[in-house]
Length: 333
Ligand SMILES: Nc1ncnc2c1ncn2[C@@H]1O[C@H](COP(=O)(O)OP(=O)(O)O)[C@@H](O)[C@H]1O
Ligand SMILES: [Mg+2]
Image 1 (tube, rainbow, N blue to C red):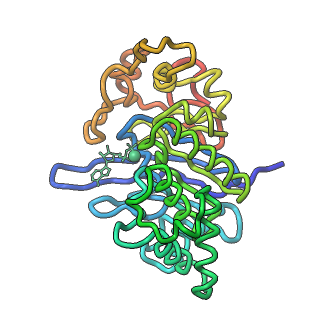
Image 2 (image 1 turned 180 degrees about the horizontal axis):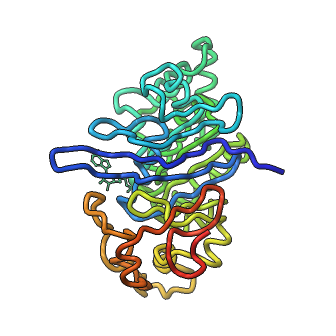
């Protein structure tokens, strides 16, 4: 059986231009979102995960712009649409944003206003995407709060976001993302701001919603533990590129890129003694404006081959294949 791909990103490049120069935030990113599955996107802070998410929804503002590549919705079908070629303010793009693709933020207040009740904001989000009566919109908003596991949804409609706990607020954020009945959800570090217990509850909620509503999920995180729990396929990003792509079992059993191995070493395990310090990756992610030559990871790589890694850039992983952008034997796809 050939799996349907809901969204295919090809060679996406995003630049931020300023007086200080050009920052290549994304430098040729390719990703596939398989229908009904979860793509985990992982990497340290500053690797381009949020820029990727915001590019898909055409939410990159000046001085940022998409400078190359394609973002294909429903690729290979008569309905195929390149979102990268649309005017961000066009009718089509506005209907895709929220209607086909929903976005869940790390901080739910990004999507919510402090000035209106949860109910009013949800009703507003519902009517934006559906021509229905106010009565129906209200019913749907209450149902959405129920869907995301908020107790006594009828009562919560009158609450203001600041009256809710962080966990409930993120549930409302998820309800907002679902208001237009999208079939693709992009969750950008949806649990990073939450305590461990609430984090687990939100991940369970996302899994349940995905199954019930047949949602295609792109889950962005810096946490390999979340990847292990949630992802079917994984893309590892470093400095605006995908450096490894693989099905989740394969990534954990036989990580190919030294960067992936380093990220995995930094994961707490049940075997680690409580006070034992976690391994961290030496050095910091360089600013994308100061991209190292060759393989951008080479200055931090414990397995660098020397001159070759410093001078030559490893080839990208071809879309749809498992492999790493790395010169080590056996790493490439
Ligand atoms: N508004 C902006 N202006 C200039 N540069 C930006 C802006 N937003 C993002 N960038 C650049 O893009 C890089 C990737 O950012 P981001 O996608 O937010 O990283 P991540 O989500 O992986 O932590 C940043 O390191 C930064 O250099
Ligand atoms: Mg981010």
